[in-house]
Amino acid sequence: MKKTANELELEREKIVGEIKNVISLMGITQRGAADIIALEYNYDNFYDRFKKHLARSSTKVQTLEHYLFILKKSEKYVKTLNLKAKQVGDVEILGKERQRNLHKLSEIIAEYIESEKD
Image 1 (cartoon, rainbow, N blue to C red):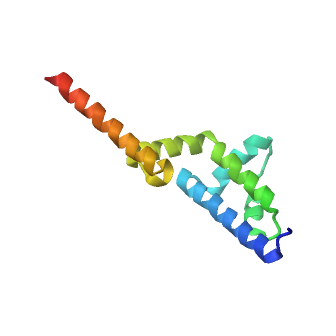
Image 2: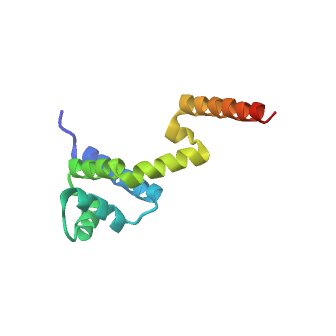
């Protein structure tokens, strides 16, 4: 079933929001994000085009999804998530079960280190 124009616009806005959240999480600017995407395609001067794609309501959802995919598979994003998970053990990043397991493992390691000191 084909999506209505309103549904597509809502989906587009959601993806643009996700892109902006990823950019913020990574601690980079839109220009930095454009550079990451440009490297994937070997584009020159991609920033203005990227900025317009984020602003236009006519940009295809698939294009925005692809930009989001490229950003999320970037080395910078992966390092940022790993660092954040190490610092705060965020449930949003790890999930409840992984966070619980991580805390249990930390307790076991701490107990082992204490037993080795004695």
